[in-house]
Amino acid sequence: MKKLLAMTLTLAMAFSLVACGNSAAPAETAASDETAAPVETTAPAENDAADESDLAYVQGKGTLVVGITEFEPMDYQDESGEWIGFDADMAKAFAESLGVEAEFIVIDWDNKVLELDGKTIDCVWNGMTLTDEVTSSMECSNAYCNNAQVVIVPADTADQYQDVDSLSGLSFAVEAGSAGEQQAQALGLTCTPVTAQSDALMEVAAGTSDAAIIDSLMAGAMVGEGTGYADLTYTIGLNSEEYGVGFRKGSDLAAALNDFFKTSYADGTMTTCAETYGVQAALIEQ
Image (tube, rainbow, N blue to C red; front, side, top):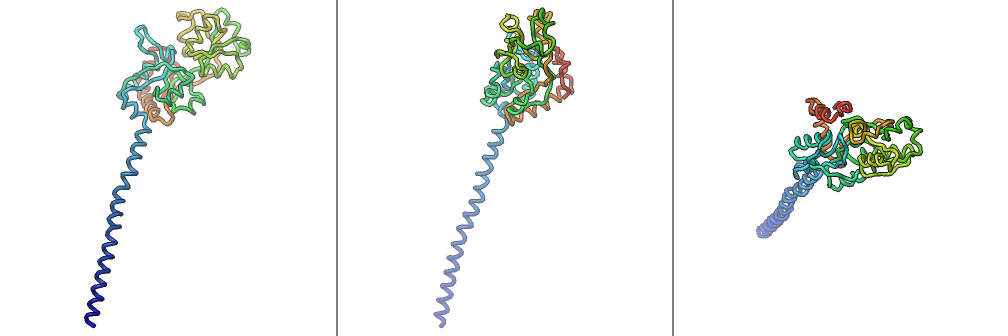
């Protein structure tokens, strides 16, 4: 009887040791799994955050690439070839506030969204009208300037074109993809797209187009007495609109620029810059 009891106790202890041995392994595996899991989930989240930051991307490469066209008084070149103008000077100041340099690239205005999305440029800063098409395809800053589309005609025929009805039958030169082209199409006018608003002026001056539709800020700087197009003038204002700066959709640079606009408007530097180029009356309070 004692031998039988001893054997029973021995078997019970053996089973107990086996059970403890089997339970230890899953416990170690669970602990190992808990340690590994955060590595798999945390790293991609950090990478996603970095990928989503346009500000970090621009600061990382050291340049803010600005897409522009020739557009006095907003973006144009001085005698030495440097880009100046209200938009150009503000872009340089904004880039400096980010710790980077502004680089200017002349783009086909009709392809501005493709240039942005392809990262050929980082923003479109060129007296860009905040149309529904623009705001739906870009991350835009707050409006900073008022503007309008105006009709340009030879000065000696201006008295004939003082209302919209009188424009019927004229051939217009307009910048492709611009607010001017949209106005011409909305009014059912005959128009020929050109690369830039400055080209539209040349068309009218050369007599290859009867008229043009361009931004009022550009018209004020480039046509009339004392300008390079003294024989041209502007007559009818077709609309009212606002300028903004466009970035890639979802870009955090838009919010950074809004903050910069507020600061530079409050300290007077934005107004001083506008006065340099004669656009202070068009400024929008930030």
